Image (cartoon, rainbow, N blue to C red; front, side, top):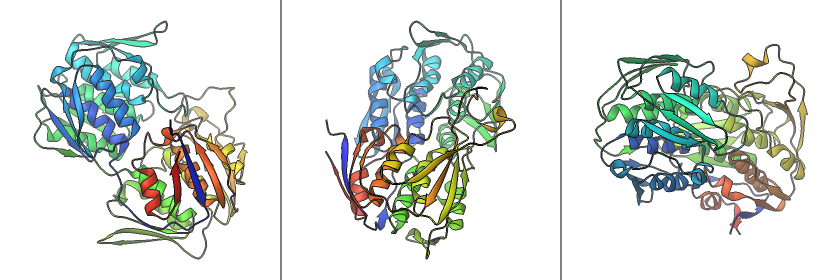
Length: 440
């Protein structure tokens, strides 16, 4: 199986990239399509490993789903006939947990295993389970099987406040509430643009969802009606990756279909670093000034600096003047790439950070007495050299490929199927920027 890249770095990469559809919107929209009683067509769906795995999983439940064009997917949920999610497929993709919503609405009960995906921390499933229970779902975990068993005796109803914002939790509870009883109120919700995209899709189909900042109110409807193909928003994580890639190599990049308002804090940090940004009818152009300046970042949920962006930002900072820090507040195991970057000559070290109230400061479930490494310091600029690298998670994978393209000489990046879970046509897009990359 081809699962490695050979990369020859050291060249300035410049050019134009057309962004693919957002992975984090596409996956949820495909699952939301199972709430319908008719065929649904979604556009701008990226052909990435995560989407392909989800389509396999949905087919195993009896529904019909497939690409009918390069980036168009047709979902026919009318033949859905299984309420138990396949363990093998679910172990490969975290979004499988959201199948609770359509399966409970279709069957009244279902069995869903612990979700898979990247191991970047112990994600707070308990907050999502609390939310489901608050809406009237009876759910328990069977440790001997690894499955959650859920029943929904009546239509969802109630009010729930997230103790800390949850992207997945917000979307799952929205889907559960679409056919709810009376008005359902969700408080302290996540604010990601992908959530707004999901709400737009559901409202276009007859749902009655009103979102104001972190407050969401949902009036239940009897059914959803498909009206016209729905287009997924461009992927802001992909945008950040290619911006960092081009700038770290000393080049420049133009993104045609970027929604700049979805990466506002990232753009602010770029400007602090001395990056020039120009907007025109042809797209948004990013280029370095005379020198790149170090800038500290701290990850928080949207509209803050996204946790998915920090690995690529760290690579960019290896080429910046001075010391910079990355403070990871969202996940407790997001620095798998650090030891790999050190192989290429990066100067990065972990810092101790004293936090007065860590349970409130961190968005993951902080355990008192456990050792955490949540802050790194990066010295720059440094000349990176080639090496052999191993990918541990999706965004770390993109940062390692970026570092290999910055480095002088040849590098081998292993485990690229993990990277390709979230990036469509990665090799082709890098080549179009002038990068030397080959999959082996």
